[in-house]
Length: 328
Ligand SMILES: [Zn+2]
Image (cartoon, rainbow, N blue to C red):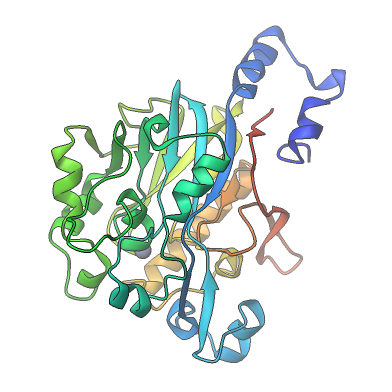
């Protein structure tokens, strides 16, 4: 499996890998796009809530809890540039917008805005971000859009030039939440995004902002209209794009949730989520689309496999992406 094997390997492909002129031209074009995984603020949350009906004896092996029964969670963003000619950030993590009391309640570890530091390490400024894609507006995915908390100052956005892309169905949920997940939304955020004049609400498979380079899948088990972004791979087989990477958001927050029956207590409809996840994984396995995890503390990207008993697993796990080329 050479796709994603490593940036170094992809630059040293054997001659035989170069196909027709059109294919190699397309792959040269794709080679110019690079991917970075960017860690944002990390979080400690109750392990039982993160693993739904799975017994602690099981999940404690996957995510060892601390003395308060909390497990470590990352909030990892994906940066792609140039993608559709733009610098695109997939999600922003939880950020540092919470006041100290809420920061403590939600187990946000650092008080500084870690994503902005990771962005700087990758060689980008907040001004460089042209587009932010949001799978949904729960605060642990969208809070990083806001500046770090400062006493007496109202919330403000930190990416001055960004357009924002999110699903229309989920937007309706965000502006009128259900009592069960009202606390997961930032009340000021929808107004701030609308006020930029650069908000695109997406209904279908593609957005105007990113065109055909990114295809969206939807899932309702975690929250209505959760939008899953697939950066399309460079190969087309039987009319379908192969390779590429999909941002799994809260459909599959990390490797333990690749196991189909494992859901979160935060999911609004666990059975629906399981059905959606099965179909999602079958499709990604079939087309060799790699999974990008936001909440897994140790794994940014992995390939989907299936074991001899038919259970979905991951392989070729990658802890971090640093200017990684998506090669054919
Ligand atoms: Zn969520």
